[in-house]
Picture (cartoon, rainbow, N blue to C red):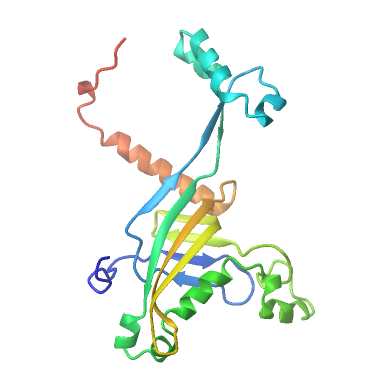
Amino acid sequence: MPNPITNHPRGTRGAFVEYSLGPPPLIVPFQFNPLQLQRSRSLGFDAPGATSLDVKAGKLSGDQVRKLHQTQANLLDLQAEQQVTVQEESLSLEIRLDATDGIDEGNAVAARFGIAPQIAILEQMVTPREGTLLGEVLKKVAGVSKRFSYTSGPNPPLILFVWGSRWVLPVNINTMTITESEFNLALYPLRATVALTLTVIEGPNGASKGSLRTREALAAMGMASVVNVTDVIIPG
């Protein structure tokens, strides 16, 4: 694993930020930006004439779509006949936490509790507010809006994945695997890695639309910078 000191980020830090109108939102700036970010999106192809029973029974895709491909010689006609279902994008990443810098800088919290406070914030990000002590307190306060993050209810916190100016994505955290290592005398962890899988919440919300505009702008710049197009041979 790279030395966390030499890998200390000098630019923009990513972060998880709770989208909240209530008390101060939960926030975890990345101490070290992830070394890699895996993105995936599943697509399902369909053909006309398929019944819902075929879909539910898993009997659809392969045979019917392949038969359609074998009946269409014109690619534009084939495009018009095919149907596709695009799933929301999934993200996988691993963040690292290390108390070394805080301890070296004389941070009393880091010296006593290591990185346990940061882990606790991450755990709060996947805990419905009805399961928290603060949620129980605020539930009894008259006039607290249900839109506030800490009100009682089964709804999970809404988290924004902030990745520089490129993305501010609303996400659901699907899995969180915390691996703690090296502990102080009170057995608080000094280092940890946290592996997460996320599902991007796509739709007409402002964050999703802003990220889509950024993606389209980047694609336009990529097309504008293409050179030597004549070297690409497309058979007739």
